[in-house]
Image (tube, rainbow, N blue to C red; front, side, top):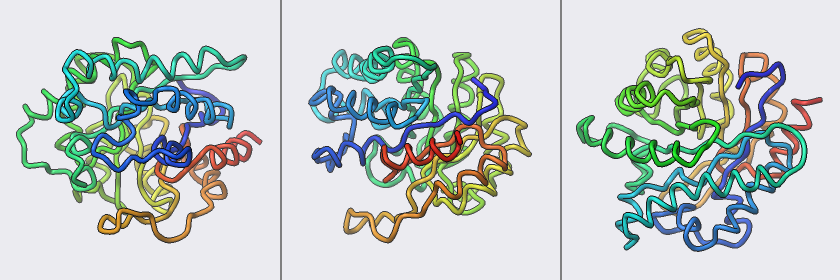
Length: 291
């Protein structure tokens, strides 16, 4: 999975779908379109690949059996939709000529299923067994569908990370592991040194951060490399700020393309974007880093 050149990730799935006219305001978020408009998810994957991304991240971040069941989807159908997230990305990848492209199966945090903002706080107040019962079956479904690796992403605290680390060790499937952070800490307030050490597993190909402010990336990457010795992964948000009350993004975007070379120098091998980063941004990033 490593390379002498940077591995370009895609950008946000949800913002790209919203730009295509979809309302994602319900609790299933982009996962709803796995059922209602799978061709639109395929179109977003294609747009990112054509923009220069090497990796497509599946639309499974918010997809879980309990989450689908809450919205009236029967278990068998929910399991099929989770597997479909990988199938859709693979079919797009396989339809494109030339080059080696990867499919990373997104594994979002438990808080994403709750759809109450707790994915940005962590410390859900549930025992580890609940987190294990939530993540374990979904990891198995995603692996069955045949991705190249898992994208364990936006993890807010080391409590959830420890559960996922145990599961990844048991499953022995390649993955990257990234935390959502604020400054030099996880969203739950734990030191990044502790967080990255928790994710330092044999089958984890890269450790780092996502869904954070662009200015937090470089020091976090340096810490990840110092703690683990592994390639780092970095895919921050655009720099805009989410207004939870108004349910909208505010402020101006940061020119992350100009910052990305510093992330590369700091030790990031996997570089892309998260919320509010679209195909045009990924194209500019790819052009800059591959120059």
